[in-house]
Length: 261
Picture 1 (cartoon, one colour):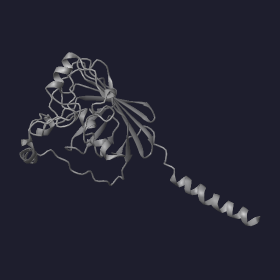
Picture 2 (spheres, rainbow, N blue to C red; picture 1 turned 90 degrees about the vertical axis):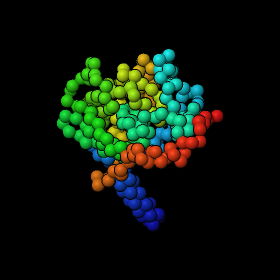
Picture 3 (cartoon, helix red, strand yellow; picture 1 turned 180 degrees about the horizontal axis):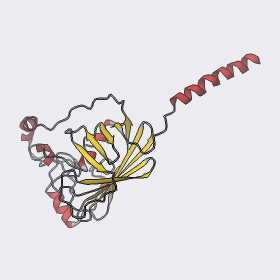
Picture 4 (cartoon, rainbow, N blue to C red; picture 1 turned 180 degrees about the vertical axis):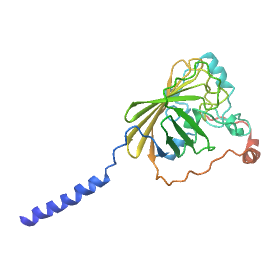
């Protein structure tokens, strides 16, 4: 009997400390700083369009366009999605090394991203094309009649100690929303919700609202999970190179237009 009790106590003594060590530390309050990478790399690439609403031909993923939005969509010839064309026939502005802009920076090739937090702003340092974006946290409002910019204007505030909400407007309508060629107008409003689940986990949700192009708002990202990287993690270099693009099109662009069935 004594041996059985001793063995049980020994097992318990081993299990409970081990379990405690395995627990993730709680998140620091009002702090998103660090280097964050998608838990699943394909979730960051999003080749067929916004992860929560891919252009995969499924009825539940069909967006509702206004007449203007449908007209804009028809002018976008993407190398991805259900109506893809051959590389030599597509007209994706990012594929000629125009800035892909915001919110596409979150909806295509979102890799390890460093968030730098200061008393006045948060700075997003993206891997793809090595671009950065400012989210103001000094209490300012979004501009009422903004001069369009590739990455627009962004302001953010804390909803609670672990949830940071960002509103953006003023994005240049020449950019595409995602890799499937979804369009937007200069009236686009984007809402991002960053929720720090624990010390090592961050979730990003994003909503698109553009009444000129879509008859209703829609969710582009739904709690996309990121994992915290070590502080000494070095972000890789991913650059759009016109010379490499020309070589790619030379090899593959002569195949003619193709459409998925």
